[in-house]
Image (cartoon, rainbow, N blue to C red; front, side):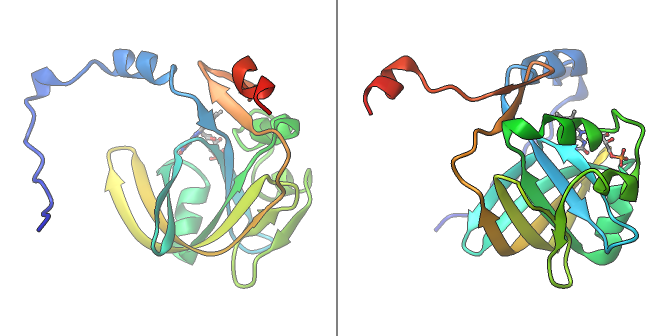
Length: 183
Ligand SMILES: Cc1cc2nc3c(=O)[nH]c(=O)nc-3n(C[C@H](O)[C@H](O)[C@H](O)COP(=O)(O)O)c2cc1C
């Protein structure tokens, strides 16, 4: 029988320096998502790489959202959010929802085409994949909340190249030569 392991309490002095942690994390590539939430008129969202599949039984995602993000209180209040995975052509959308244009909330949505999931969140029409989620649990840790969302509906627009983020830069995916030539 398996049991949860109780994490050992680690001495503060043994923790890695936050700058060193960030330097190492810059080497970890991530898919770029827009987490959206809210009803028309009060929609908001953020660019995020802290998104992952938790389990497929039942289909569940987790996202990590800073408490200062405009989406944070909206997700807490509505208990809904959506995850939209960006394609390489959506670079401008990534900048828009990372606060790089100065536009906020609804003004960001004027720049793209969205549908609204029934009783749910904005779904970006051209996203590579979109997941409409109901909030199942929230775990607050330091500056962020881990939001766990049960996936209520999912859709994909396959065959577009994903937008990726690595070492502070946006980029895209290329197959290795060996892989491409084996087709
Ligand atoms: C590539 C990239 C990834 C990001 N990932 C996250 C993330 O996973 N969680 C988070 O809270 N903020 C993340 N951010 C920061 C938010 O996108 C940014 O703070 C955003 O402006 C917050 O939304 P607001 O301006 O509506 O408050 C990321 C930013 C970038 C550029």
